[in-house]
Image (cartoon, rainbow, N blue to C red; front, side, top):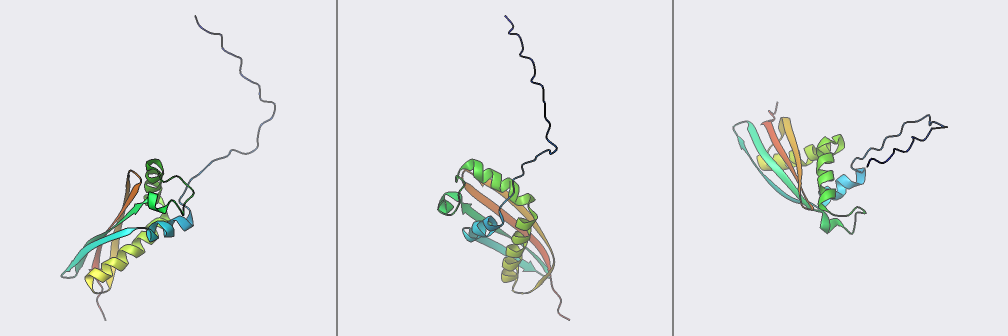
Length: 139
C-alpha cells in the first residue's frame, strides 16, 4: 500500500538572503594547539642543502580544560582537515618548521619549501612539517 504524498507547502514570503555556514579554525586555537604540542624535529645539512621535518602531536583530551569543543575523534578529524587548508595555520607551521630547521642546520637558510601535513588518530592530532631549503650564502 502506497501512502498518499502530502502537498508541498506554498511559500508566502521569501528571504532576500541565502545563508552559508562556514567553519574554520579560530585564531586563538592555533596558538593553543601549538602551545599544547609535543614536538619532535630532525634534519641535516648536507653540503648546502637542508632537509628535515618537525612533527607536532597534540592530545585534545589534555586541552579539554581550555577548549569548549568536545575532545573527541570527530573534533580532531575536523581540526586536522581544516588545519592544512587554513593559510594562517600554514604560516604558523612554516615559522615553527623554519625555526627548527635553522636550529638543526646551525645556519640561516634560504628558499625554503615547507610541506604541511595534518591527520588525526583518535583524539590526537599529528601535524608534520617537511622542510627543504638551501644554506643562505653570506655576502
